[in-house]
Length: 112
Image (cartoon, rainbow, N blue to C red; front, side):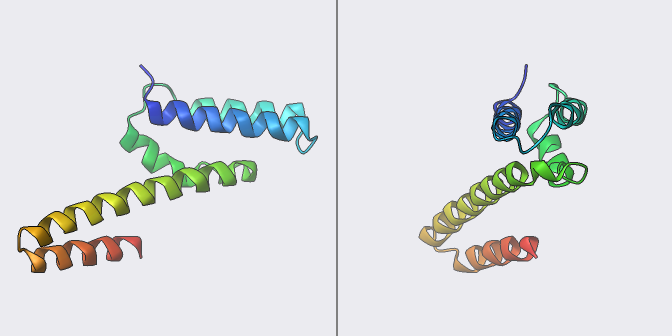
């Protein structure tokens, strides 16, 4: 079964390609090349973790995918940030200020 994350990514790419075709920004052949590449790079059996590893390089071959890749990377970053904030808030309410600071510091270091 295809994951919701993969489904949304494929849907966003299909929408992008259709939009670019309608505006004559790409040719049918180019859209077909991109579609073939996406289907090979993102098979239906991928886990969310595998998608996260593949996503940053998805637009390396086709610059047209950059907007969708950026959108999904930004969404992933926001989810991670919110999870860190939620966990830090919980730690602070438990009186574990040092752990909360360490958690937030680790989060910021991972972004660098």
